[in-house]
Image 1 (tube, rainbow, N blue to C red):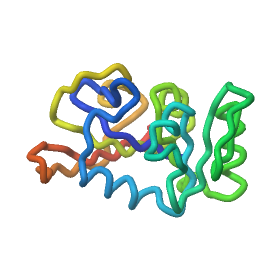
Image 2 (image 1 turned 120 degrees about the horizontal axis):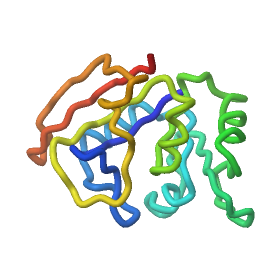
Image 3 (image 1 turned 45 degrees about the horizontal axis):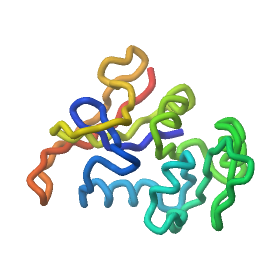
Length: 163
């Protein structure tokens, strides 16, 4: 199973319910990696999607403790274990992606064996963070490709593997 996320220099991932910045190249990478696969997200992440609609061409699983929450086109789950179990009915481990937010990423770290992290070489105001994967003993960077974005930001697509 996979984590996929964009993070700034301080491992910030969001601010006031939004992404830190929109990077065309990262959005393209995210789409390429997740189309046709399962995505697991928290309710707040789902509600932050454009039009509060599921991501197209993906099986969307939304985690929430709110028993009354419903949304068209998604499978609502009350726990990470339930979401993983449901996703595994249709998808292989390598086709399941955890896509946020902060609590989902922190919990997913124990289930995932690969993390695709777009590292943004900038600092943004953030109120949501992921762990510093460079400082975690059980994760190792396997591949990293840096590029300068259309906006002039430097980013790198880093692939981490659990060891």
